[in-house]
View 1 (cartoon, one colour):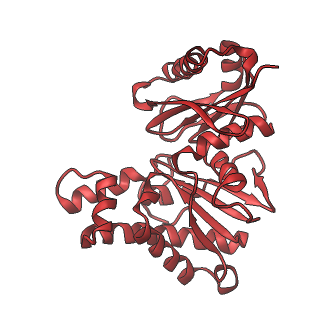
View 2: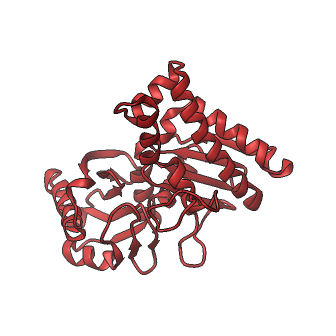
Amino acid sequence: MSKKYIIAIDLGGTNLKVALLDLKYKTKDREVLSTRSFLEKEELISGIVFAINRVMKYNGLDKTDILGVGLGFPGPVDTKAGIVHFLPNIPGWKEVRLRDILKKRTGLAIFLDNDAKIMALAEHRLGAARGFNNVLCMTLGTGIGGGVIIGGRLYRGFNNAAGEVGHLPINERGLSCNCGSSGCLEAYIGNIRIIKLARKEFKRNISLEELSLLAGKGNKLAKKIWRDVGKHLGFALAGVVNILNLDAVVMGGGVSNAGKVLFDSAKEALQDQAMSVQGGHVKIFRAKLGSDAGLIGAAIMVKEG
């Protein structure tokens, strides 16, 4: 019997990551493409199909070797129907029946879900949330996504749209957000907003990585920016913790690389704002699986699906 593999795809606002994993979730091959190079919906779908075919060809595999393809998307997805409702940070996506399209073009079994949900799945099964029953897992990047684990199971909500912590309103008359609303957490702590703020403060071009580096070296301005981000984050988390009585919060994604200054500020704001019973014991962790969480989660979805 031939060995089976899973193709995992993690689509972010910036990168399209593709990996080939075995059934123990070990990565055999991977590549990263820029999402920005696929401006149109059709181009992106063709890009995904090309990536699937390339990874099979390059590794000498055919359809019978592939258990399935798992895809994570930065937006609301109907997992049962295989529909991507829309992608807040990638234009042109509206009610796309992606599972049917990809199944037709590749002949493979296709599984899709929201990227933060599958990151939560990965961190709960194999990462920082292992052993905790009630957890919010967050991806902090271009967008702010969330996946909620309740009683050890992924909580999907009425139509699989639960966990959108990035669109938790934290200000009644706040900044406008890509989702079309205003005052959302994402509008304050998404990486585009942080970079904009940093450029204004430093009066020059500065990357997220450099801002994290500077904060780590004790730069006062960089530390203040990250502390403010942490404050917004902790404020929003307090609301979630009060409602769901979580035992842990796990944070990953590019913004989480700011490290200690961000986490300390978020913890402080969470403790200040949350009710004592709910906030007293909740732990905040950095995601363990790093940038691979989405790929591993996509593979888990295929294997468990």
